[in-house]
Length: 276
Image (cartoon, rainbow, N blue to C red; front, side, top):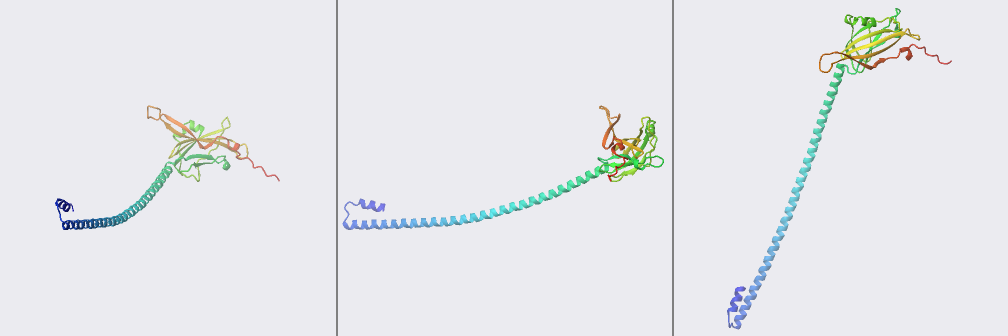
C-alpha cells in the first residue's frame, strides 16, 4: 500500500479512470491487509490456546509427579520410622539383657564376697546342759552366704595367755542366712570378782576377720545365765607414707549387738498369768 500510494502521488495529471483504478487498488490492498491481520490474530489466539492447553497438561503432569514424589517421601518416612522403632526395640532388648546380666553378675559377686553379711554368736541360755555348760549357735546376719567360717572360742584367761596362737579353730564351713549352726564347743561360765564371766570369739569368714565379746552373769529370773554380746570387724590400716600394716581398727556392727543383759530384755522372766 505504501508503494502504491507513492506511485499514485507521483502522477501529476491522472485521468478519471486512472484515479478509479488506483482507488480500487488501494481498497483491495486494504482488504488484503485487514484479512491478513485477522488471520495473524487468529493464528496468535490459536497459539495462545495451544500454549494454555500445554501449560494445563504440564501443570497436571507436575501435580501428578509431585503427588508421586510426596507419596514416596511419606513411604520413606514411614519405613524409616518402622526401622527406627525396630532398632530402638532391639537396643532396648540388648540393654535389658545387659542390665539383667549386670544385675546377676553383681548378685553373684555379692554372694561370693558375702556382702553385708556378718557372723553372730548367740548363747542358748534356754538349753543349758546338766553340767552347767551353755551351748552356742552362730548365725549369718545378712542377705548373703558366708563361706569358710571358722571360730576360736576362748575365755578371757585363755585370750590373755595367747591361746589363739595354738588353739585349733572350729571349722563350720558355710553359713546360710536362714538357719544357724551349733558350735562344737560349749562354755561353763565362771564369773570373776565382778560377777561377770568374760569370753571372746575370733571369727574368720571370706569377707573378713571379726571379734565378738560375750559376757555371762547369773540370771535374775528362771534361766541360770543372762548374757550380752557385741561384734566388731577388724580392719587392717596403713599409716600414711608406708604400705606396711601397722595394726587393726575395730568397726562395730549394729546387726550383731546386744549390750543390754538378756534378762533385762525379759529373757527368762515369768509370763504373768491372765486374770481369772
